[in-house]
Length: 169
Image 1 (cartoon, rainbow, N blue to C red):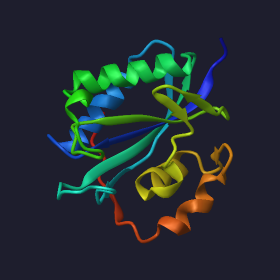
Image 2 (cartoon, rainbow, N blue to C red):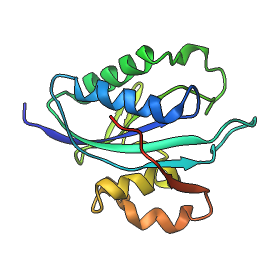
Image 3 (cartoon, rainbow, N blue to C red):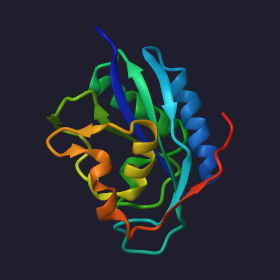
Image 4 (cartoon, rainbow, N blue to C red):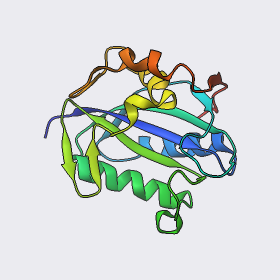
């Protein structure tokens, strides 16, 4: 299988978020069939779509070349989340605080709609915490069915987001 460019979203707002992102990135780099191309700076952002107050998130995007199929890559991301004590079954409300959140944002130019896997990520074009770091690592990234990712930055201008210091790998 030839390598595909995949863009992955990383986020955390619990248990030292920058460290959580760094730990997840190290685990990603150890996956067979995954080679890092670029990692965005970290961004602090306000929680979006939450019904209760919670801490700000730290977010980043990683660009990787992978020979893993989309489902296998997603399974590997979920395994990393479990290693970092994220428990999806206990999250009774959407957008709950979490130690780590790893999302498969884009997988080449493919559109995928399967149980438990939708690519491109369905709300990525509505979220500054995805778009800003995505454009940092892939300025010409295209969201299949929508167009250039950077085109959506103006629409999310009101969402609070600021670049923050990275945590060393």
